[in-house]
Length: 458
Image (cartoon, rainbow, N blue to C red; front, side, top):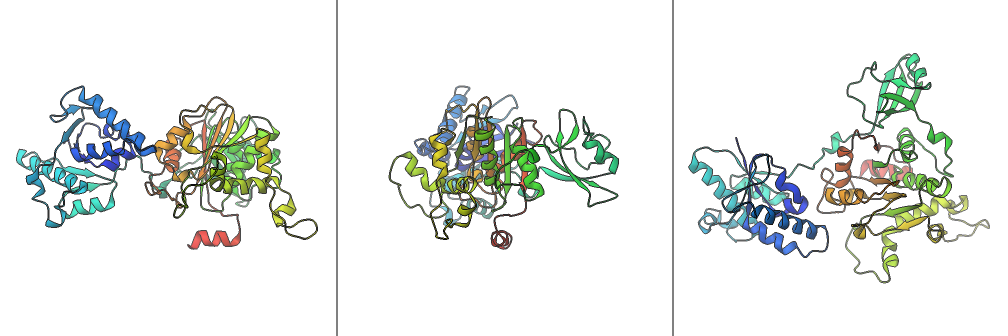
C-alpha cells in the first residue's frame, strides 16, 4: 500500500536528497515549505547550499510534468506533489492552531491529505515527516501520524565499536603470530568480522593470556598488531587496549580513513595528532598535517573576532595547540615549571611546525572545492558536523591523503544534530567493513582521575 509522506522544511534542509529516499510512495511538499526554502537560499552556510540544491531538484522535476498534479521522481515509482493549503482546511484546526504560521499551514496540508484519502475509500496512511519535535507533538494532538526523518540516523547504543573479544585455544593463538596468520573461518563468531576490526584473542585454558590482532579482510585472517611497538611517539604511548588498536590504525598508511569515537579524555585527539606528527615529521609519509574543526561554540558567541583568518581561528584551534604543545614539549613543560622552579608560559612549538610547512590549520568553512593530496588530515569535534558536511570533507581527500575524524557523540553543540543523526556516527556506520577504513570506540578516560569520574557521573 502506497503511503503519503508530507515533508517539513527542516527535512529538506537537513538532507536535500530526502525526496529520493521514500521509494515508491507519494511525497507531498506544502507550498509553505517551498516558500521557506526560498527564504533560506541566500544563507551562506550549509542550510543555504541545501536550500539551493532542493530548489534545483524541484525545478528539474517540474520539467517532467505538472508538480500540482504529481510527477514521478525516479524509476522506483515515487510521485511528488506540491500542494497549497486550503483555507477551509485551516478552519478544521483547533483554535490554538489557527494562527496561519508555517507549522500550522503544514499541519493543515497533512490533514487535507488525510481527508482526501478518507474520501477515496482506500486509506493508506498519511505521515507527517519532520525533525521538529514540537510539530510532531502538535500533529499527534490533531490525529496525524508524525515521524522523525530517520534515513541517516544511527542508534548510538548499537554503534559499531570496532573491537571485540574472541576466545581461542592455545594452538590458534600461536598461529596468529606465524604467516599468513590465523584464518577466521573455523572460529566460533557470533557476527562476521569487519575489515580492520580489532580483536582481543583470549586463551580458553588461560584467560589471562591474551593477544591483540586485527582482521585483514583481503586474506580473511587475523594478524598481530605490529606498528605500535615499532614506532616511538615520544611521551605518548597506548595506555589501554582500545588506544592500542587506535594507534595501529592511525599508523597504517593503507587505512586511509580512521574514525575515533569516545567520551572526553579518552585520548582521541592526542593519539591522532601524535601519529600524524610521527608520519609527517619523522617518517615523511605525508607532506604536512592539516588540522580543522567546526567553528561551533559551547555557549553564547562572543561576537566577531578581530584580525586576519589566522587570528580569528586562534580561539577555535586552542585545544589543538594545547595538544601539540604537550606533544612537542619536555617534562618541564608538562609540569608547568622551569628548570629553576619558577613558572613559565607554555612554548608554542606548533608555530615552528607551521613555519616549516609541516602543519596547516584550516577553517572547515572554506574546505569546499579543495583537493587535498598527500596530507595527514585531522577533523576534530566531528560530532558537530552534519552527514552532508562530513561527505563534503571526505570527498576533498586526494591521492595519498589519510583522514582522521574524532569526536564524542554525547557532547554536541550543534543544535541541528544529535547523538544519532550527526555526521560522525553516520560515517562510522556507512564505512563499516570497508578495507580502506577503520574505527575504534574508546571507552576508558586517561586524561585524569577527575575527568574520568566527571565523564561517568555528569
